[in-house]
Length: 198
Image (cartoon, rainbow, N blue to C red):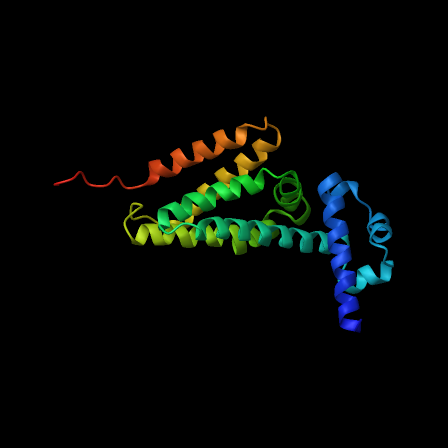
């Protein structure tokens, strides 16, 4: 194994261990000594890759955010129509957010550990950017009324984040009801098609 491969293997081990521990017990419940011990690396190796526990958490959060964005994009790309793509992507986001690991790392600890501004910057680079792009297409093609896209994207993003947090405390069958409510909410935003012959 080359030195570069060994470094990447060590970094991957730290990320995987940190993700497992942060998801299980939250950021505050995991100590640096435990992260090092569970990863099977030295403290020096951790500091070679990360400036500390917060930096390691940030890397885990960014990875989770990219994975969720990937799930959303995959669901959207399975549809042909831009409107169906938006709805499928939003449903996929809520489903991903219902996962306990995603909730803990991305929605609960993310803003608390990194601060609202840093967390928002990461969210903007992934989820909100994709949502904004999708909404811009729908405003441009007349599916949605002409309006500024940025406020609408933030409103929908906030609603979906809140729904995911609520799902963490709710019954297992609430995901389907939440997705149905989101679908109705999105449908209410859409321009009604003109009646035939008008």
